[in-house]
Image (cartoon, rainbow, N blue to C red):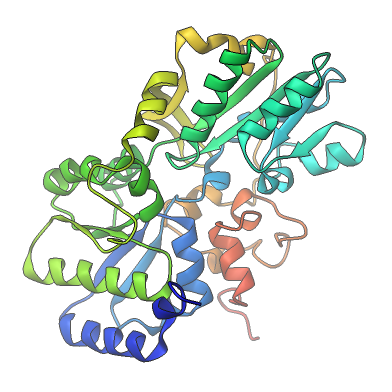
Amino acid sequence: MKYLDEYRDPALARRLLDELRATATRPWRIMEVCGGQTHTLVRQGIDELLPAGIRMIHGPGCPVCVTPLETLDRAMALAARPDVILTSFGDMLRVPGTSTDLLSLRARGADVRVVYAPTDAVRVATAHPDREVVFLAVGFETTAPADAMAVLHADRLGLPNFSLLVSHVLVPPAMTALLESEDCEVEAFLAAGHVCAVMGWHACEPIAALYRVPIVVTGFEPLDLIEGILMAVRQLEAGRHEVENQYVRAVRRTGNTSAQDALSRVFRITDRAWRGIGTLPSSGLELREEYAKFDAAQRFDLTGLRSTEDPQCIAGAILTGARLPTQCPAYRVRCTPRAPLGAPMVSTEGTCAAFHAAGREPEGSLA
């Protein structure tokens, strides 16, 4: 398929890997931020083909995975109400909360619906004026503009029964938090191409300069990632720390200014909790005061909930790259895609799901 097969050319991949081996003179540790990139690296076995010493650290780039448990429990409390239609993307339905998940609630009669865009939820609210329609708004800078447009559309329509349960998070503050952690091992980043397609890469430039860390904006196909790793290693070997763009076919430095305008119009920056990681300052979005009428957290009483993680789930260590899924005692034992303990085993961008799909065995396994 044109514009796809050429980014999966095995001969070119071998040449890039040969060049990478010739370039690297010492071990380097590189984090890919995006969960989609993680799946390509693991599914294609790229992480195992890299030269000895080049280690990929899998970062917190799965939007489903970083949604805090408290938000999920709030969504389930709303879904259990007979006057509410809870809408969300499909991945969110199987993410475990403290005691259940949205899919199980739907099986027991809750009106939980999968939508493909937040504007679909607006249409549901229009069609059901007698019900409250809540959209579970999660994700990074990639999904937030569509949620902003849904709010603007609902506002124009004067819909009194539409709201968002917001849990949007931002990538640059997470990168900063990782670099400032005492046990940080990251020496370079592969930045998520789709985030930069929206926001541009200029927000990464202060990070590269302040922490003296190379950042390469990278796509999601095998050749994108191998070339991105090569570009990062070239910088590391030369002692450079710049932002470079590998994903030139999709990303500009300034990003999508129309999407940015919609974001700034509807949302403002706030502190935000990340699942398994904790609260990071200025790392999320919340609705501005003029759109607070669309905030489900203000519209409904969601206090009094107690959220508790499964003690065997090490999602936080997985999301920060401190541990691999194969190092988790529950991996492929208590925690599987059919019975997940945590979000990284559920999502199509989750690191645990990527390792499981690739058939990676637990450390110490005789298989």
